[in-house]
Length: 570
Image (cartoon, rainbow, N blue to C red; front, side, top):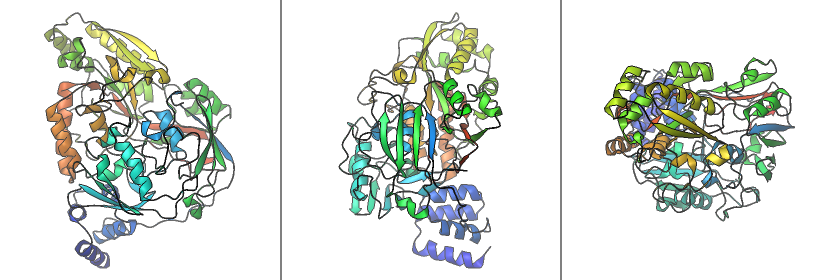
């Protein structure tokens, strides 16, 4: 124990800390959490790095945190990036983003209140600090001063209020309701002064700052007078790069933003970014191997094996909660309404063999829930579901389908998803199910109206097919996954599933502060999902990117966001 550090910590606890911070310090002091978990949770509560270091030093959990000098980087050059195209007809309004092409295109030049790191900690971006009240129902954010949008307007509280009211408006078509529905309403977003904003929540949410981070990729900050449909036409974000041109389905160009607030740190070394859209994995792999591009936003082992053996390519690897969901419609007039049928389908999958085949084991086993092993809140005592054909056949007979039935699985031509669809098709054949495959382009799969409840399910295939496979990106906490895909009337609840017990456990989980309480409620949700099986989740795979050896300072983000503000060339 360091007495000087303990004195500083005691003064902070007495004069400034609230109940949430003091509970956190108590858990660290009692040995209930390790150093990494303390740093992660302290960053969520908005504790400064100096105070985090003080607490660690006070309890002998490690030295105080200190920065290191940034290495010298080469200035100049334009990086060529290959990514998945956004849907052509959708436009680039951030509040409508719901796929990888959107978030990567918008994320290159957009910024957020906070930014989540690969270690699940939070860093200040356009917010410099944030603090909760005693029960995490009110969060107060201090904003960065001296920031300007790329059209010259000043960034301030009005910008944040306008952006977040759009994000939380159920009539705006906002896909950010996946994060904020039941958590934050438009009236709860309030300006305190020019550089202070307060969020008054609908329900206690201990991890709310994650929802204002880059993991809610729709929450790019925009001017207060932003006009819908103008994102791709007028540069107006705050990031290191300005979107200078956008050609739907073809590519986009970005130039260095000379007024970026981060330029004071010399952290925008690239002159610009040239994006080319690729719908075919083989084409983007060939482009990188042929030196036509410098960086691929996302690669898949199953379709990009040549990259993993090339001496001229570096692989960027980030473990996270990225996964594929296989929803089964519980409200459709077909055998999938019966939970026993859904359980039987789940029991046909050989999950270890799947991750070996598709990822060369660069993945974690999934247990048909959104709770990845990477989450500290995941209770790993819940038994892993395993292949059991004998039980699957008994369940099918009990449900009245001993000879099976016919059903169509609809999905998209993206990464390893077609191979997964074929594996599921072969697996369910063992219990008599004749599964037809309908594999679309990503654009067609996400096309159509997709308002989500309470406005209905729209016409888009990914929310309406009897069985589907949808790509889900990493989130630093499972909140968005719980509220959007599993809770009753979630905006992305493609199974159309509803369970009151799950809703109660979810609400308790979202408001829980102590890690032990989070695990208790998370275990309840896991057990309900295993019993009901509204969807399959066979694995959580590592997010993988790839680049030439001359790319420096780039790190894979399990969310799939492409953050290039600190990237340079060797």
